[in-house]
Length: 363
Image 1: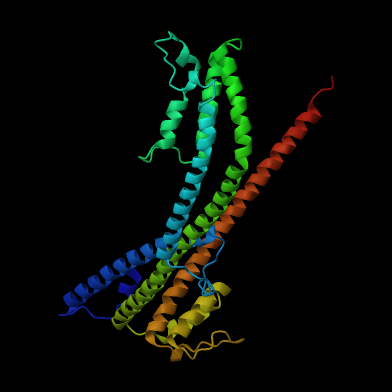
Image 2 (image 1 turned 90 degrees about the vertical axis):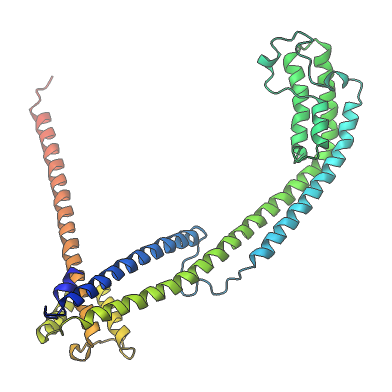
């Protein structure tokens, strides 16, 4: 704003206070638009990161050919799938219940029907050896729980069944009756489980496929949200452009006219711009004149036919672009000097080391 204010062509007279207030309003609005643009940049970065994570680049055709399913429909489908999966698992648990009854009704099962009476049996070191006690009674309660705290998967029951046998075999001596009863019962259980396992494996395959489908649908839901965000961003960016254009015209209205000498200076400065910056210049001119052929093989910019807002845009753009070019050139020169100095130091160090080796007396 400092450069713009310096170019204002209004004389300080009786209306100077009015101009000052007006300029302050414009300056304030510029700051508001700047903050607005910064917030849009943050939102855009979030959207870009999302599309980058799924391997989609953002462009004019980013939404083309992409089918976005309704979020509510996806949520209903997910709920239905979860309900069907829960019913399948209930069926598996019911079938496993037959195996559980056969094991618990076996003549060797009685020592494992209730939690170990540690105090009554005087097993003072039991919890030093056994980390997680388990028994058939506890398993049965978990299988029949209706409060949502029971087993969610038949593999959880399988793990606890094995834990009953392993605890008994870890704590008791191999020669003891409890050890041998646990071993015999575990062999019986494993035999029954081997026949039941294919059903469990089939359920696992179904669940893996459903998990993949759920992940894909979750991605679709997120993508739908980001597509909406992208549309909103496009609208906001258009509004921001309109606001900036209004501000530019207000500023230009208060600026003196570009002189013939300044037009000539702008024309000469264009020759010093990079190809990338020249494309931006052509875009500025094309924005003011839709009939301007910015993609022609040869492009002539007639300074005398350009309107004042476009000339001021070019003036400030060229100024900033050349300053950035000079800054970049200096940074490049500094970088080259540092690299050259490092190379020289390295060469000197190598030469000194070679000299030491040459002067070192032979043993």
